[in-house]
Length: 444
Ligand SMILES: [Fe+2]
Image (cartoon, rainbow, N blue to C red; front, side):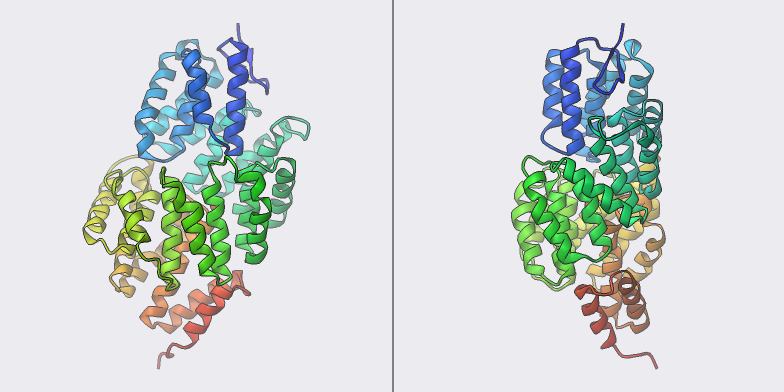
């Protein structure tokens, strides 16, 4: 005997109120609203044999990309595997995914969720976990195409359709189809103002198109919808700070760091890395960030030996360089090199991106701008391999531009500025860099 969830997906557990409660927990995750983990814990307290609830809990913990959550991830994966004999094919796919993630093979994990999503096109958690996996793997086109695979199975009167549209909008944006991304993202926000991921997709479009004033206003105008109870608000505030920086308003960006990003206490790696990358940008612009680097690097220091995800390691290094903490820089370099010598997805990311990025950032911090450029420039072609968005990885372009200007290398500075201006010709930030580059002596 088998049951189904709200989208008709088969569930081996047969207690319908528990299945309905899990559907509600799914809904919280899809909107990035608090707190799907607490919701599933409550379900499992009453129904410890609910296989799909364990698999869902494990999926959330895995895709937090935070080693601090690993003990709980282990617990959930083991609990799910212990129940596997009563599971159906869909549930076995979910469990195979979280097992692969736990074993360090994020690509295989993402493909397992992807196969579940193909076999059960209305399995929204499978689609979202695969989508987030694609994000952490830097698979820009799959962010779009994996969602496209299931679109024929969704339409406007199916509950949850807006979440599919929001994911598709973000995929379209990362793949460069800004017009379609914006219209679909806006439609999803209109349908559900709490849909933080759809808001995020629209913000990314504006970021990529240099619509800084409009982007800051869009986030301010929609915040009443997504900000209350959001587990993702810090990242949307980070985007608003980027808009302010692009418009030359560092004070507003710094205020967002203090009031909306740091104020949360940096409870998870995702918050820490937004804090790091914002302070790094502010510092590059010469904005005095004071003691903020120290507070941030102290939080990162508790994760110094994680070697869990190269993207986190590089963002931790920003803080150690910003704080001028050379012992921590050396230890972080050891960590990322150790990760590079290992096996699995993170080893690959660490080898290709993590090690040279950390070396380049340390060199930048010591004023060795030539070495920084030597390490960071080749990453422009392949930085997607350690995940994140175009907007996040723009930090490399910022750092290279600033390094070239500080080095006094006019051709390099001109080249980096030209690259930036080609995408955002009206950006006050880019124009300020252009002015500084033009003041450099031309080579004789
Ligand atoms: Fe983003």
